[in-house]
Image (tube, rainbow over all chains, first blue to last red; front, side, top):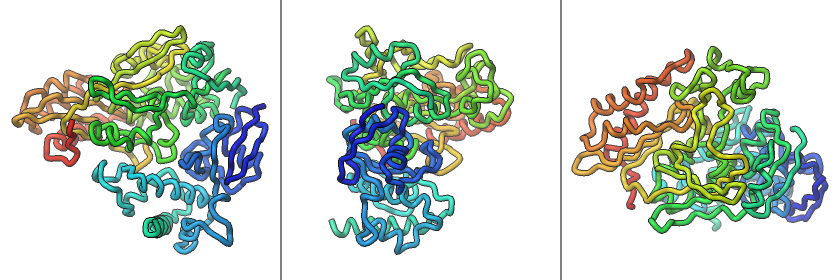
Length: 172
Length: 333
């Protein structure tokens, strides 16, 4: 067993884990944070997306022991029911889900993605590698392609992300 | 997942010594290795965690080339301002691969070493010489739509899946390694991969415990560059066919032609005979067609993947038209 210390949603937690434990299973089964979902468990669906040191990753495809000392943000740390994060509020306002299972991953991925755009990162959909990226529908679809929604709520997911990104830009 | 011994390496030298043991593996991004370990296709006894080593810098070399640390993530490499401006082909290839989440984890060294996505390699009940040497190849007569048309043997027709490595081959990258005994060497990417031959389980020339520490690019090519990828979905899918192309036009003639191909070969594919057909000549569809014929003269379909032969010809033609016409991403070397 390995002692693993993580700063999760601002709180320092230490757990003893088998080296095989993925970060996803550590969060859900050992730390009681079940907001992060397990879909495919192979990095294909994006339901397990979290932020590690501010970057979006698939929690299912990494070992918890490799993240000893890291800072993790899950959907529980983004906002509360009384004080939603703007991305969460936008998903509600635009009805960006049906069953809701992929939603935490969609929201965490969207928050990470908006940060990437703010840093000027281009995407496969960007006409130029060097210009300031604009979050068009095509850009959002490309940048969110690692998050699947079996209910196919994509039009409303795109609308929610687009609205939240505009609000973030306006307030910054 | 089978149990394994986990160790976080303190230095590249220590990592190499620990990973020289049989059935030990380096782990960095882990996006491919853990996927395979969950399916028990990879069953290492020991994982040597190299993810905290100081190998994540991107720096210019003395000759204006670029040295990319093995642990630079695919996301950071694609977004690097110097790479975007001077090696746009590399940015484009990286951005055409995987998803945002995976690119944030996957590393430069790991990307080169990722395993094939051949369905029979991934299916433990199937015969696969790459997964279980000597067992046979169920892809040969099976559903081989994604498989290779170039570089295959009677033992294996699995495609190397990387987009990044295709761009790296076109850009004449070299792999810098550190051996378990402390020796360093530089391997041109063209000599790095092995064709499947009789034992497709051995995919590179790396020795046990030999660690990739960096990938080195020569000075910028300076011409028009494109990475054209054809796939089943618009995003987050492996290539059916991809073409990395870089061409400089001088007085209307093509110079320094570089072409590499993904989705069709058992390794990131490059055939310099094809480049020589174009070198010093004026671009024309007739000439592009001649180049495609030469590239594909030894291509062999296996049924479901026969379509890749005409698709490669058309994708190459399109990439050459794009790079020899006025095109946005001119580099300023």
